[in-house]
Length: 426
Image (cartoon, rainbow, N blue to C red):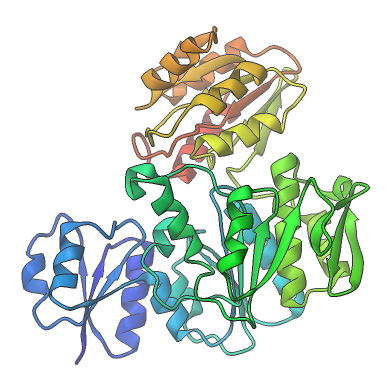
């Protein structure tokens, strides 16, 4: 019997272990606290990496030296999948866009799964699906970092800004991981790219696939863009209006970009503009992403726990152009540059409440830029209580941490739920 090791025992690791067992492999799951990795390697042919496992870990390097095939969980998923995949990546907007694409694909009346970095193991979710199935897969740089032949029918890259430097070490390595989503595509496949992101426009020169751009700010000769406040598809001589921006329930310039990207993916997958318009009108967003919680004394509270980097938090602040915001930020420090984020804070924020591992660095950068009204607190109870005390009528209280959650919580979902619980008992 062939022997495989799965590195990591989270959702992805457990899911891919089951799939490999169903394929006839003898599978052992390994985690960092177990020890004895060298003994596990005896007779093994394959090492499967969960997304949280960096490819430069000593155990991974040892496996490669021993001649094991090293693949990420999504490569196993892709290799056994007979249907079509729309893979979506980017620094920000992945969850919203993937969820929206999933709803659009459901209008095709075929089996549809939404999985990947969105909370469900891709390999487990795709097991047993036929050739008529579609999957909308949210894909992170961690998942894409070590792929070999991975090539979705439609690859979509929303944007690129600095992130996860604690894992990838350099910006070039982070961007290269993202580019793996489309490097192996053929001329029969499609890549959807953000025309407004100069990093992405240069990619098209090296791709074999058909490139479809989307743009929020420019009318394109071909692609998906905004014209007179409406979403418009212009592709191979056809021009179709989908719906108006004002028809969206979600808000903010970043969500206009997410919808443009979803329309491009949906259209290339065969969805009608009428069906896509219905989905957009009914789509109220995803939990923890600019999620409205409640209004107290004419102050609106929003949960944006999904903002795990500075660029995402900037987009959240810009979604409230006419409000002075009481902002709760901080968490596990990714060591990314804080300049643009704090300049945006200076423009949009009246009270800055900081907590978590990053609080001191955030506070120093804010002070250096002349930001006042900085409050450092010890926990979320104190943060929410202080925000409630400081917020004035017509203001917004916003949790948008600009950090990941691992210093205080298991994940951003747990952090967002804690914030909502505290707001709901105010």
